[in-house]
Image: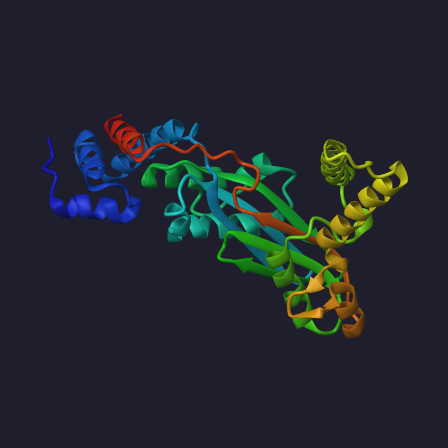
Length: 303
């Protein structure tokens, strides 16, 4: 059996970035054959990736890529915010955004199947990184733009990402609108674009409040408000909500004396669309107590 030297272990680690002991075990199993040892590590890392695949990924980053009128916004998730700061993880997200823009995949599965360099698909790069770090990672969603208009993006700490499609001579306006969206989080471009289910939810909340007020009035021996007054209250609540959540009606964060619509008109700019991703939005994150988390990690390391 070939002698496994520290230099050989170091060389394999430099090539694969796998843990030192895993490199030594692979070299021993491969009887010192460096190429074979790399293959063994890939298999082992893939196995670790499979074990990690069931764990919730509610942290992560949003990455963007823009080249002229073609752009993409991608959310890539991890289990912890610590991994979300890892350079290799950030490179994975950046590569995913570039691939979306350049290849226009139909869905996440098609994106993962795209070649991502070094003879690997994006999914193989992801699986290898899972094995290296020992934490699950997933590409959750993406939005691609292909337009004759202009694109501007803004990333807030990599956790909130926005791309805005706009027409106008001043490039800064697009960037300002993207930043405003990240801060104020509108759900639609205009009030007519707000989803009906959100409007009904707001109306329902207003109705419950009106019912509570009516019950309190009766309990106090006072008359409840007439139905027509209640109806006006409900409509007022809905209109207030629409103003708060539609981009064009919101007060501009850089000048609250102007609405976004007024600012755009002043600048001769039109916003056609936008997409905003917030990391982990809508994902139910499992919360364990610290002792249980440590125990689970130790068990995973022994596996």
